Image (cartoon, rainbow, N blue to C red; front, side):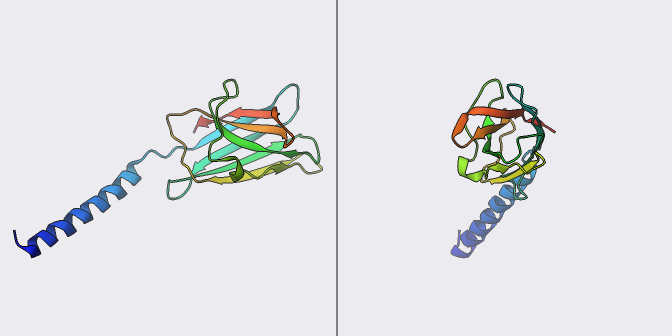
Length: 147
Protein backbone atom coordinates (compact mmCIF):
# COMPACT_ATOMS: atom_id res chain seq x y z
CA UNK A 1 0.00 0.00 0.00
CA UNK A 2 1.43 3.36 -0.97
CA UNK A 3 1.74 6.28 1.40
CA UNK A 4 -0.94 8.16 -0.59
CA UNK A 5 -3.38 5.21 -0.33
CA UNK A 6 -2.75 4.91 3.42
CA UNK A 7 -3.48 8.63 3.89
CA UNK A 8 -6.72 8.29 1.91
CA UNK A 9 -7.79 5.34 4.11
CA UNK A 10 -6.98 7.29 7.26
CA UNK A 11 -9.00 10.29 6.03
CA UNK A 12 -11.92 8.05 5.03
CA UNK A 13 -11.84 6.28 8.43
CA UNK A 14 -11.81 9.61 10.28
CA UNK A 15 -14.77 10.84 8.25
CA UNK A 16 -16.74 7.67 8.99
CA UNK A 17 -15.99 7.88 12.70
CA UNK A 18 -17.12 11.53 12.75
CA UNK A 19 -20.37 10.70 10.93
CA UNK A 20 -20.99 7.73 13.22
CA UNK A 21 -20.70 10.01 16.26
CA UNK A 22 -23.17 12.45 14.72
CA UNK A 23 -25.60 9.66 13.84
CA UNK A 24 -25.28 8.20 17.34
CA UNK A 25 -26.06 11.62 18.87
CA UNK A 26 -29.09 12.02 16.61
CA UNK A 27 -30.33 8.51 17.39
CA UNK A 28 -29.88 8.94 21.17
CA UNK A 29 -33.24 8.99 22.95
CA UNK A 30 -34.06 12.50 24.15
CA UNK A 31 -36.41 12.51 27.11
CA UNK A 32 -38.41 15.36 28.56
CA UNK A 33 -39.69 15.14 32.13
CA UNK A 34 -42.38 16.95 34.11
CA UNK A 35 -43.48 16.93 37.74
CA UNK A 36 -46.37 18.16 39.80
CA UNK A 37 -44.92 19.59 42.99
CA UNK A 38 -46.93 19.25 46.21
CA UNK A 39 -46.34 20.66 49.67
CA UNK A 40 -45.16 18.38 52.47
CA UNK A 41 -46.41 18.22 56.06
CA UNK A 42 -49.61 20.19 55.40
CA UNK A 43 -48.01 23.03 53.44
CA UNK A 44 -50.22 24.54 50.74
CA UNK A 45 -47.36 25.23 48.32
CA UNK A 46 -47.73 23.56 44.92
CA UNK A 47 -46.20 23.92 41.48
CA UNK A 48 -44.67 22.31 38.43
CA UNK A 49 -41.27 21.37 37.10
CA UNK A 50 -40.30 20.91 33.46
CA UNK A 51 -37.04 19.26 32.43
CA UNK A 52 -35.68 19.15 28.88
CA UNK A 53 -32.34 18.24 27.31
CA UNK A 54 -30.14 21.09 26.11
CA UNK A 55 -30.04 21.63 22.33
CA UNK A 56 -26.82 19.64 22.00
CA UNK A 57 -28.19 16.81 24.18
CA UNK A 58 -25.27 16.91 26.64
CA UNK A 59 -26.99 18.86 29.41
CA UNK A 60 -30.34 19.53 31.03
CA UNK A 61 -32.56 22.62 31.35
CA UNK A 62 -34.83 22.77 34.41
CA UNK A 63 -37.67 25.19 35.16
CA UNK A 64 -39.68 25.21 38.41
CA UNK A 65 -42.74 27.28 39.32
CA UNK A 66 -44.18 27.48 42.85
CA UNK A 67 -47.48 29.01 44.01
CA UNK A 68 -49.21 29.54 47.38
CA UNK A 69 -45.89 29.56 49.23
CA UNK A 70 -44.83 31.79 52.14
CA UNK A 71 -44.19 35.35 50.88
CA UNK A 72 -40.55 36.35 51.30
CA UNK A 73 -39.27 32.78 51.67
CA UNK A 74 -36.12 31.67 49.85
CA UNK A 75 -36.25 28.01 48.79
CA UNK A 76 -33.16 26.02 47.82
CA UNK A 77 -34.10 23.26 45.36
CA UNK A 78 -32.51 20.43 43.40
CA UNK A 79 -33.19 17.48 41.15
CA UNK A 80 -32.27 14.23 42.89
CA UNK A 81 -32.09 10.62 41.78
CA UNK A 82 -34.79 8.43 43.27
CA UNK A 83 -38.26 9.57 44.30
CA UNK A 84 -39.96 11.70 46.94
CA UNK A 85 -40.43 8.49 48.93
CA UNK A 86 -36.91 7.10 48.37
CA UNK A 87 -34.32 9.88 48.41
CA UNK A 88 -31.16 9.93 46.31
CA UNK A 89 -28.28 12.27 45.54
CA UNK A 90 -28.35 15.70 43.90
CA UNK A 91 -27.96 15.71 40.11
CA UNK A 92 -25.55 18.18 38.53
CA UNK A 93 -24.07 19.64 41.72
CA UNK A 94 -25.84 21.92 44.18
CA UNK A 95 -24.29 25.13 42.84
CA UNK A 96 -26.16 24.76 39.54
CA UNK A 97 -29.44 25.66 41.29
CA UNK A 98 -30.10 29.27 42.33
CA UNK A 99 -32.63 29.41 45.21
CA UNK A 100 -36.23 30.29 44.41
CA UNK A 101 -37.31 33.60 45.98
CA UNK A 102 -41.01 33.73 46.77
CA UNK A 103 -42.67 37.08 46.00
CA UNK A 104 -45.32 38.89 48.06
CA UNK A 105 -48.09 36.92 46.30
CA UNK A 106 -46.57 33.52 47.20
CA UNK A 107 -45.20 32.88 43.69
CA UNK A 108 -41.65 31.95 42.72
CA UNK A 109 -39.71 30.53 39.78
CA UNK A 110 -36.37 28.87 39.41
CA UNK A 111 -34.22 27.81 36.49
CA UNK A 112 -31.08 25.74 36.23
CA UNK A 113 -28.86 24.46 33.46
CA UNK A 114 -27.09 21.25 34.39
CA UNK A 115 -23.92 20.11 32.65
CA UNK A 116 -25.22 16.53 32.62
CA UNK A 117 -27.97 14.82 30.66
CA UNK A 118 -30.55 12.82 32.61
CA UNK A 119 -30.41 9.10 31.90
CA UNK A 120 -33.74 7.79 30.67
CA UNK A 121 -33.27 4.66 32.80
CA UNK A 122 -33.11 6.48 36.15
CA UNK A 123 -35.88 7.88 38.38
CA UNK A 124 -35.67 11.56 39.40
CA UNK A 125 -37.55 13.99 41.62
CA UNK A 126 -37.51 17.70 42.49
CA UNK A 127 -36.97 18.67 46.13
CA UNK A 128 -37.89 22.11 47.43
CA UNK A 129 -36.05 22.68 50.72
CA UNK A 130 -37.38 24.86 53.53
CA UNK A 131 -34.35 27.18 53.75
CA UNK A 132 -30.56 27.19 53.40
CA UNK A 133 -30.31 26.79 57.18
CA UNK A 134 -32.89 23.95 57.13
CA UNK A 135 -31.93 21.77 54.14
CA UNK A 136 -33.19 18.65 55.92
CA UNK A 137 -36.76 20.00 55.95
CA UNK A 138 -38.57 19.43 52.66
CA UNK A 139 -41.19 22.09 51.89
CA UNK A 140 -42.41 20.43 48.68
CA UNK A 141 -41.55 17.59 46.36
CA UNK A 142 -42.50 16.14 42.98
CA UNK A 143 -41.51 12.95 41.16
CA UNK A 144 -40.40 13.58 37.58
CA UNK A 145 -42.28 11.56 34.96
CA UNK A 146 -41.24 11.04 31.35
CA UNK A 147 -43.41 13.03 28.95
